[in-house]
Length: 190
Image (cartoon, rainbow, N blue to C red; front, side, top):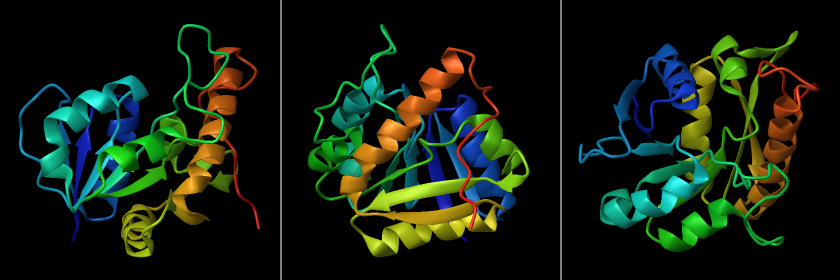
């Protein structure tokens, strides 16, 4: 059994926690403004991208050696018109640089909370795309996700986080413009 600590208890954190619990694993919710100790081997940062720096500043030593999952989409919330990271980078790569002793993954950012909770996108199963440079960390997260009834696909190295963030950005802008619902998503169909 794996313990997953989720920093943030909004819609995404709650949906991810539901998947963790459905798979028989332990979920621990931690408010981003609390000093509660992190006990999980996997830590999901279910917070807006602008909150990550504060979490890293407060908890970098505590996150060392852990699998840290960045679910953010670093978009400019004032305009909803662009990402706020360099064109050749990602928020996940910035997180990895800030936490050199952690195993940083990008995952869940191409999913909406509703599709994680329902475990389907239309008639297709929900799939979580996972990018990272540590194969064992990706496998550990994939096992938790699959145990919870959701597909998981290795999307490649952490450098692929840039593309995942672009897909997440596109989905968010489509939903905000009401071109798709918050229960929509991109399904992988073989």
